[in-house]
Image: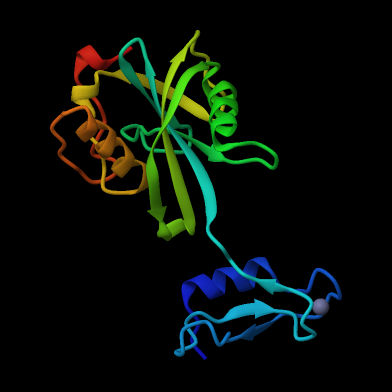
Amino acid sequence: MGQSPRVLTAMLAHRFCPLCATPLVLRADSECGADGSQSRLACPEGHWTHWDNPLPVLAALVEIDGRILLARNAAWPATNFALITGFMERGETPEQGVARELKEETNLNVDAISLIGVYEFIRKNEVIMAYHVQASGRISLSPELAEYRLVAPEKLKPWRAGTGYAMADWMRARGLPVELSDWGAQAPIDPTSLT
Ligand SMILES: [Zn+2]
C-alpha cells in the first residue's frame, strides 16, 4: 500500500516500540482521516504511538542599533540570509529560549523582546514562534553561521515561507511597504546594508 512521504519518513526514523522492542505497525486512528493518510506508527501491544506532532521552533528578528541582523547558515547558498532560529529546550520559556539561542549563535544580549506571531511551517512539521528582539553587544558568530548582514528595516525583503511571513508582519506593523519574494532571492545586496 502506498504511504505518504510523512509516514515513510516516520517509518525510517522509528521502527521498534521503545518499551517492548516489537516492530511498530501502521494504525489508522478513528480520529484520523478516513483515507488512511493520517495513519500513525504504533506498537501492536498498545504501549506507544508515534504522534508526529509539529515541533515548536523559535525565530528572532534581531534589531541592533536600528538595523536588522540577518545571518547565513554555513550550509546555505551565498545569497540566503535569514532570522536567527533554534529549537526550544526543556524547562525554558520561549523568551528564555530566544535569549539562549541569540547568545549561542551571535553572542548578543536581549534587551527587549516581543511576540510578532505564530506561523506554520508544515513542510518541516514545525510551528514557528517569531519574536522581535532588541539586542546589544558585540557580534561573534557560532561556527553554525557563516556570515551576517545588518539591514535597514525598509530594505528587508521578506520571503514566502515561515519566518519570511513574520518579517513581513513586523514590517507592516511599522508601516513599511512589503513585497514578498521567493526564498533565496531576498539577499540584501544594497552596499549600504553591508557590514
Ligand atoms: Zn510495545
